[in-house]
Amino acid sequence: MSKFKVMVVDDERLARESLKIIVDWEKHGCYIIGEAANAIEAIEKAKKLRPDIIVTDIKMPGMDGLDMIENIMTFNPCNFIVVTGYDDFEYAKRAVKIRAMDFILKPIDTKEFENTVQKVVSESRKIIESEAIATEKLLLDILRGRKSPDVLKDKENFYDMQLGNLCIVLIQNDNFEEPSLYRQISTLYNQNQMIVKNIKEILGDKFHLVECHDDRFVVIVIDETLMFHQLHKMLKKLQQEVKKCAKTTLSIGISKENNIDNIKTAYDQSKIALQNRLYAGKGSITFFKNIENKGNTDIKFKDTIKNELVFMLKARDSKRLDKFLENLYLNILKNKKTNIYLIKQMSLEMIGAAIDILKTYNIDTKEVLGQDFIPYKTMRSLNTIDEIYIFMRDILMTVIMAIRESVVDISESGIKEALDYINQNYAENITLHDVANHVHHNESYLSRKLKKALGMSFVQYLTKLRMERAIELLKDPNILIQEVAQQLGYSDYRYFSSIFRKHTGYSPREFSKR
Image (cartoon, rainbow, N blue to C red; front, side, top):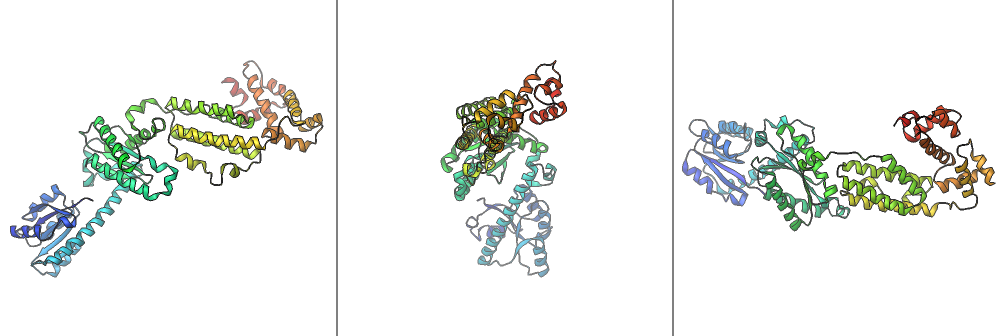
């Protein structure tokens, strides 16, 4: 805990010396930073030394103590202990109004003075803590774009940030996201306290530290003489010390140099740099300048990925699914350009598609995946491609096993024959009634069996076959849309176009021009 700086002001040298030794300042968490023989000298020294507590006489030559206090309060709001030999009630009232913490009469009673110091220190600590909370909130609001950096321009304690360039270092306690540690709040708290302690010790005093609510620490570095290679060395040391004493790893993202007006941009850069641990793994240090030109690509063919997944799940093909997932996430890892949020979004959409399939088979999702299964919460805690891949593989393999256990065997009497008939005649204007007659089954019974075997209704399966064939036919640039519709059993080409758009997201004309 930092010590409070005390300045002593009195026109009598003996009185100043007495005030410096009358109590054990060290015991109360204080130290004497300076002294002044008059109000003018005190004001000048207060501007340079920034004391937390000023012990002052009232009656001094020239400007008196109370005028001095009013002046100092305009640029350095701190606490005052007013000492005087004049038992003047009006002076006392004015001192209290100015926020002097107590009014001590000469001759000074040592015990009374010590109690006053203790009280002032306690009040000072409360003020500093509340100011620290307000400062942290203000900086967070600026970093997140809720407030303009202009609000800092009139604040003396941010003067150093306004003089030159700064950079943002975003530090993540990797253990915060381990599920087992959610139940160990004290462990997390102790770890974070050690992290803060090490940040302050290793990075020195040329920074502002903001602790975010998600166990991230924002360090605003304001030392213009500090080179990036020196910063990297300091951050490596920070990681080593934290790993040794707090038993956790830190992932770190560093912005480019920016001025105060672009502080939000710097913060956004540090967040992007921190996301690189998706590829580099936990415990990585990433400078934004090293990754900014790599771009940020979207995941291509998301619909194709989802369609392939649906097909494999319905086919209960676990080997193909395993290879599919391995290749998918391996390609993302090699690409190193895709935003982590896009990867997680795609993965969650895949889980959503798998859950939809379970529902088509009338399989209880909670029974298969667990009562407390909330995929987006788990996904939020995953921060490497490997972690996401393992999670997705576990979920989708569980789904495929559940489907295997519930579906009707296609080789069951009548089902294979029905599917063969549909596959051969889907281009005709066939109905479920036609298929049921062909295999000599009750229509509603066959409907239930087909849905259980295919994971979709007869109409959905028939449409799927027709649309797949339509896609092939439309690759011929000379074919007419009316011809395609007729070849697939649609007498109204407008209805066919509507179905095709629902299935592919394009009209037949748009699709053929691609």
